[in-house]
Length: 214
Image (tube, rainbow, N blue to C red):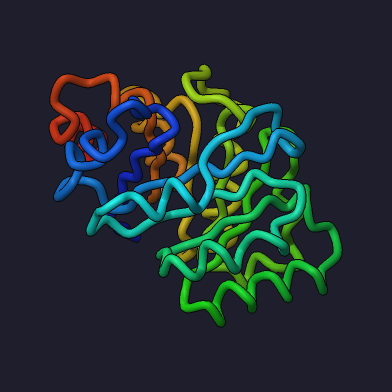
């Protein structure tokens, strides 16, 4: 089944001193723009919040990746910004009823909903809601910091998900470059988050284009 490949730069790897200019550099090339929200609890790092996002101007749909311990308390503030998509972590909401309520709240806010898995979390952990989400995010590094090396063992999770759910959008995040992107696409991923590879490039639009054609 042919699937278009979406490329999603992560602003975690952008130069925060000139963040608007960094976003402008991928305008017209990126499909989505990922906003990594970290709370210093679920992951050992802090990052962006709503006050920063309110200052940004872009036509690129915003993809919010909630790496927070309490996603149920955070989604409303992002929905008010009319974001495209919100993903929360399976490891932070364990009960099926809680997961479904969060997915419904995101949908009620006119965004699409996703659930994420850390590298060590098996695919079976989300069997209860995989039919309910718009996207599954497979982390190919431990969440929390940009610039980490790709963990190839997670590709088996992508293959398993793709074999079970042919039409599911599968996103991969962590260590994505023009080499690992080819592995991800071959395994069945169709949504690639790339931070360092894009924002370290002199020509960001060319870097994005190279990931589509690997």
